[in-house]
Each structure stands twice: as structure tokens, then as C-alpha cells.
Image (cartoon, rainbow, N blue to C red):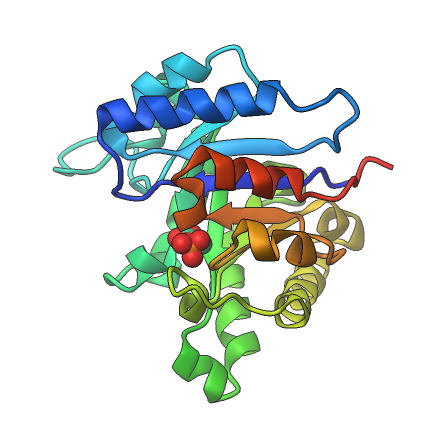
Length: 258
Ligand code: PEP
């Protein structure tokens, strides 16, 4: 059974007051879900300066807090970087790795693999993001690109650690564009990723791996995307910046606990 995950990537948005207000509204909205509502795991990734404040506000509740990036190094002379231990120290449980906005700034697949390893070694759950550009899709390279990013990202991850890993398929052409992948397009890539996970570890490990979809998920398209059996939740950017739209996406999750 894979409980869906709805994670809000706040990126470099909001100020302190707005981040706290959003966290509070999401916390209260999640708390008010009816007892029989489908189980959903919810998380948010605020910008570094507000992580601790948001973590404090959400402490003791079900919503996890994660960083948007981490250093592959443990500690030392790496100006501007933040380690897994630092994120864990302030109460983060998760961290995004290899978001396309970082890959576009030059982050390689190999570096993302080192970050995944650093996150796991630091007791954080990495959310490994993979996805193709429009040019790569048009050139028929989607499978090759996504599987290369995935395999490099999880190189060195033991089968026993697969349950401590999240993957997000985020086609670059769908991020922040308002143009989401169709349920069929996303489902096809999710199935490819799961088959690759089965080859890499085992069918049982692959069946336990939660693969989220990201790219212009909003209340209007969430139910259709989240109904795809291989889609185990969503990584949400723009629509996570207001509580009503984020909460509607949470409520669009199917019941996978049955
Ligand atoms: C993202 O940045 O991870 C994302 C999916 O953004 P958006 O929902 O705005 O497309």
C-alpha cells in the first residue's frame, strides 16, 4: 500500500509572515479533514530562512518539513551550502534533490546521486526529481533522459532504503507553465520508472517506491492525475502557495489504504 504524498515546493517565494501564515492555514486545513478522508501524507519545503519557523509551527503534527536542496558534503569550507545534518538538526525530515530548476543551473546527475546518498546518510528522506525538457520529449528521448537521471540518482541506494526515498517525475515543460502532462503521459513515465526500480532492486522494492508527479498540478487537474495507479502523489509549486488550492489537491487524493 502506497499512501499518497502531496508536497508543496514553496521555492524562493513568500516572506517570513506569509510563510508562517501559509503553514498555519495548511496545518489547520489538514487538521479539519474528516476522520474518514483518504489518508494522505503532506509536506512543505519552505526557503531556508523560514524552515525553522515553519517547523516550529508544525511540530507535533502530521505535516513534514523539508529543505529544497542540500550539500553532498558533510561539513567544511563550502560557503553557502547547507548539510543534511543541519537540516535534520532543525527538524527537517525530507529534502528535494535535483529539482529541474537546479539541474538547469548546472547540477549534474552524478551530483544528484551524491546528494541522495548524503541525505540518506543524514537520516533525511530525499525527494529525487527527474524530468525531461520539451526538446528532449520532442526528440523521443524522454525515457532515456528520465531513466538516466533516476539511475544516477539512486546509484548506491540499497533495496532496504527504497522505503526512505521519494521520486518526483517532473517534466520540465510542465513546471510553472500551466501545461501539465496528461494522465496518460505521466502514467507512462511512472510505469517506466517503476520497472527500472524493479530491475535495480526487486519487484517488491519497486512496488513500495512512491513516485510523485509534478508540473502544473492544480485543483482542476489533480483528481485525474492522482487517479493513475502508478502516481503516488504530487509535488506542487504554484498551487502550493495558497492554502485553499493546496488543500483541494490534498482532498483530490484517492483512497489507497483500501
Ligand atoms: C515544481 O516546481 O516542483 C512544480 C511542480 O511547480 P508547478 O506546480 O508550479 O509547476
